[in-house]
Image (tube, rainbow, N blue to C red; front, top):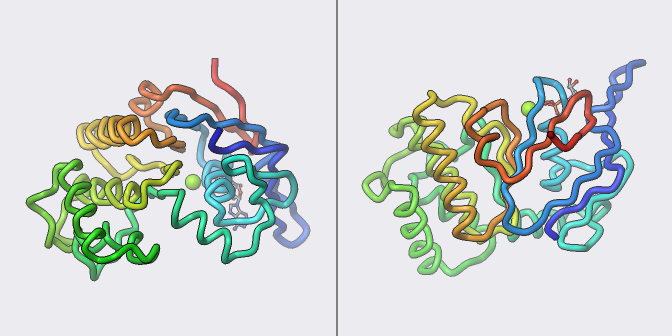
Length: 224
Ligand SMILES: Nc1ncnc2c1ncn2[C@@H]1O[C@H](COP(=O)(O)OP(=O)(O)O)[C@@H](O)[C@H]1O
Ligand SMILES: [Mg+2]
């Protein structure tokens, strides 16, 4: 098992009001599965991915990552797990604007102290897999949105993560480009035996997913 949450809860306090963004979520995620979580805007998708991605602290409940309780680890430990074991893909791509496509894919490896030669070789291989061998030296602003998201997919795979978290990864893309990105993410995740959790409204993602959950008011349910 990759991730398990136990009664995972995150509340936000805003003055007198109290929002339960993620409400007692129990999910068990097996290795190499492709999971989608669908829910309307404000239902808690981003909050849940931020908790599972160790970018946020639960208000109550637990997260186990590969069997280890990581809910209350120190920031340094969390950062290490994030860097080595979790890849992130965002709706708005989040590439560094001053780095080339190649450098953006190398960056997570540089942060993990991978030797530069190894970084380069791996980044070239991954950019080949996402079909961007002819865009290595392009800056993000010189790429189309589909190409930009391909770079983000390559970057997410850079440190061979056990888990990729994708928050509405096709939200900014036209339908044809979205289909290409979904197929790419699906194929590469199966090839690399990486677990993927995607928060989305996109029917194309829901169709390929091994397991589909819905989320409403912070409550997660297995679909069907
Ligand atoms: N930092 C925050 N402070 C206060 N409320 C927040 C914060 N982030 C999210 N929320 C609230 O939590 C709920 C879930 O938000 P979010 O996880 O972003 O939903 P989704 O990604 O499904 O659109 C919403 O009601 C939102 O307004
Ligand atoms: Mg969101």
